[in-house]
Image (cartoon, rainbow, N blue to C red; front, side, top):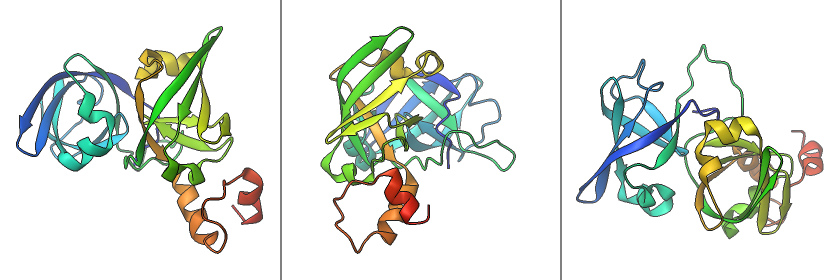
Length: 212
């Protein structure tokens, strides 16, 4: 489990293909401080397992299934990636609960700059639209963000200077793709809400009516 608060921006050092999976080596300073083999690290929002590490980097295997369903398939040496270690019992929980299970990929439609902030418009895959709640949470490339607006199928989010500085979202441009994980709360609500139309868009008012 993660929080969606990125600890550092790592850099892809190498990618080695091994049959139906790849091993990626990532430059890291913060996430390797207390790392051990088998620990989980979210890489652009994808939960991966550290299989090797040293003082300046760690390696993780990425399966064909993960490559097929995330942006990790497009990575190349030198690319920046968002990194976050799994939460521990003594770590404060900011952001929101992020599992590291990417559900789809969205495409950036437009990028607008307003002073020191940026607004991204992102096209959401059909199967994820029902989980989008205006003013609710969403993880994009592992970053916990608030949904500013949602006009089917376009999602708008606003990036503050802190996010632009400390994540790779500031490097993204129209046409780029982002890993998407919707808020786990939305899935629980779907269970309760299953008697109604499953494609109906959730709102904060509907959540309140359901007791959330």
